[in-house]
Length: 320
Ligand code: UT7
Image (cartoon, rainbow, N blue to C red; front, side, top):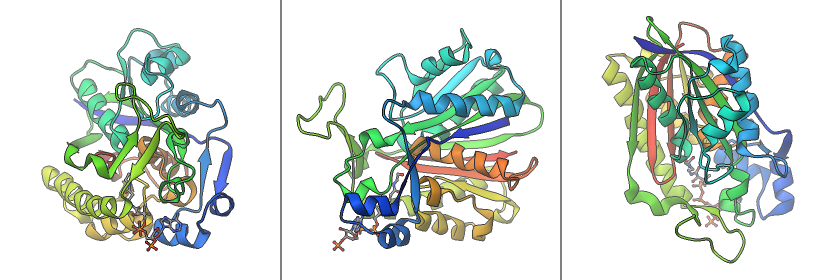
């Protein structure tokens, strides 16, 4: 028994913030942001719009694409680091919105790898026969934990949501997932402030802190190892891959991973220019964009990867 992706969906908040808008807010330039990151614009949640507000339409679109009624969902794994509440978790809040009751629903707090961790867990429940219709979500309102005075992070992060529906299948769908973490690097990328540590008195009371150039070097190196690991574990040569669907942190990191795989950039789904870095939402958002514009087709072999805060990273090899 395998699990297979039978529907994808995504949602972006209406408000668009361009590099030119940022030029008016801080000492930065469109040229610097585009050259160093590939980002041109990003979406930002409206005041009062929460992570679950973004996740709900993404989930409904994925369910509609799968031809599944929301009440059939019996498992929700929700990757996010920007939850609506301390509890109930975003999975439970989303379950209530969808009118699906009784199955397990939880959130996974592994920063940019949140979706891949959630996918890996859901895959195991489906394969074990314990979930028949699993919803896997990655959704974030990173604008809420962005220090808008810190140009080194404010130009990068953004809001959005993506989702997939997983069902049991006799044909291979999720071929493998590999997850990793290494907390020794916590100080290079973390969020200041927390429930048990307390919040600084001064604003912003929660904010992403990153040593960007150190994170960059490690991301390139470990994502390279992660894609090698996924191919080796499946006995697959890189020439057999149809698409790379990477975490959208920086176009230069994506290019480095594509080079490692000998994949031309027209076989890589890139949304970083339009979406910025939406953390746990970035991989399912890119996946849905590729599916809906017809580039990603049933039967194709995709490699998904992500790398994020603290650090966590991983991959999924997927037959669509
Ligand atoms: O998703 C989780 C994982 N996160 C990542 O993978 C992010 C990884 N890191 C990166 O993407 C890149 O390191 C950044 C885009 C964050 C930064 O690019 P960089 O090429 O590594 O630049 P840098 O941090 O080495 O800074 C170079 C210069 C500095 O000025 P000086 O010291 O050379 O005068 C910075 O102060 O660029 C300056 N700078 C900026 N200038 C204009 C930093 N941010 C900005 C900015 N606008 N927004």
